[in-house]
Picture 1 (spheres, rainbow, N blue to C red):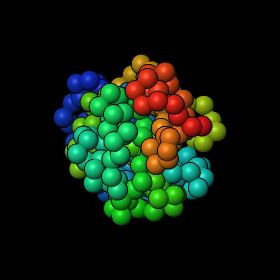
Picture 2 (picture 1 turned 90 degrees about the vertical axis):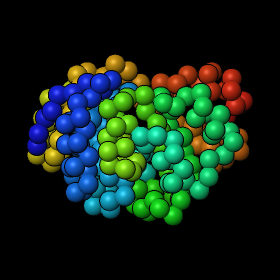
Picture 3 (picture 1 turned 60 degrees about the vertical axis):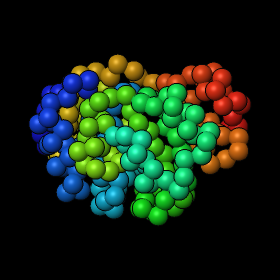
Length: 213
């Protein structure tokens, strides 16, 4: 396991390159998003997906969310972007809003836990976006902790818990925002709130109306 210090707003090219290189060979990394530290893997790799489920002790019935480096990348992994999702994207991406779409045939079944849906966001963190763009694909982004245990807020805490089980930790200091992303499912009508989080619900309903829960 390697630890590399880098800034989320102005990431070092060497750190992004190291992360993308590790991801390409199915390794798991830890990196800071615009909310919390996440465990990352290549979303196209069945091996990486299995590794993350195992590391977290997460039920394989719960899908893994991903981040993308740009909106155009998202279009390759969803069936379509509904008009109501376009409004959310315009207002809240880049940012801590995760949107659940119907997935395209390009998405591995175990990433979706056979739900047929993919949870995706374009983060405000430039580091996270550049890792995805460096890989050329969405990157898994699930909280860097074991399921049911406290969130880990530093590279040291992550190293203490996961040790050599992960290839690389990008150390960007403590999270600036301890709230997880807000999650909205746009595959239903009306859209459904799956998790309240960093984007206030009032800001969302102001733009797209009431949500189901």
